[in-house]
Amino acid sequence: MASYDVVDVSALEGEGPGGMVRKARRAVGARAFGFNYFVLPPNQSGREHDHAQEGQEEVYFVVRGSGRMLVAGEEVELKPGRFVRVDPDATRLPIAGADGLEFIATGAPVGGGYQPPPWG
Image 1 (cartoon, rainbow, N blue to C red):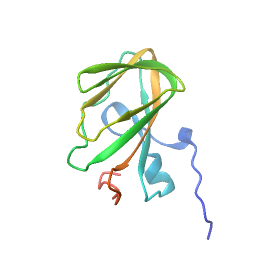
Image 2: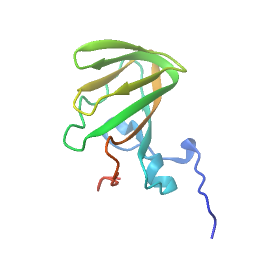
Image 3: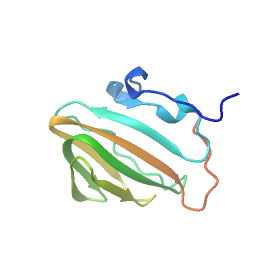
């Protein structure tokens, strides 16, 4: 039995609203924290949400494209190579720019004890 798993994001089917989510955590079977790859078409918004109920902090890493993220009513520029950390109770909404936006979202509860969600 291998002590690792490998998946190419190009092999993952788009899921969720508009097929924007590539469920990478599920594909590799990670258990300690959550992460997914997102592909937003040009000028498209993601889903506004927070993680107050789960107490989950998230970090976003922009891979390609550009856009902005509304975090608790403040606008943060998104560009390749940028990390953005968001508190669990802050609402967040990613919005792609004219070239689209690709990013990785990684998260886990601040106090530990991550549990994979039932949706993947």
